[in-house]
Amino acid sequence: VQLQASGGGLVQARGLLRLSCAASGRTLSTRYMAWFRQAPGKERVFVAGINWSGGHTYYLDSVKGRFTISRDKAKNTGYLQMSSLRPEDTAVYYCAADPSVILSSVRSQDAYGYWGQGTLVTVSS
Image 1 (cartoon, rainbow, N blue to C red):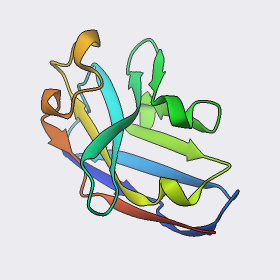
Image 2 (image 1 turned 90 degrees about the vertical axis):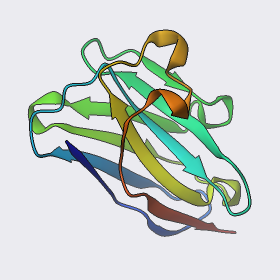
Image 3 (image 1 turned 180 degrees about the vertical axis):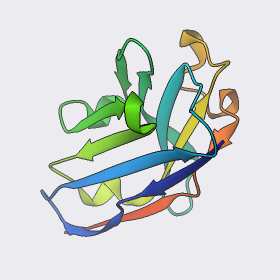
């Protein structure tokens, strides 16, 4: 399966964007889908995750209340709705999925075998 991330762009502070992560090749079989981000010169970090079947969600503390992760199983697509964006949210955002992820590993990038190519989000002040 291949993941295609899209929706990034340039936005002003306090603006909003919606990222999409579409799976192609075959029906996505995953326990969790997650979004990670990597800012310039920094390590990739977990942003948000969602249990694909039950819909439970998990967030990085700094994005709680501003970002919402969701999924449309029929469309094999996950989303990250971002609002009240801040300059420190500037990063390349990656989506990830894997059928073997367990709850204790949902925030670990090493748990995911399928990755999108990344989409750049730039927030200007």
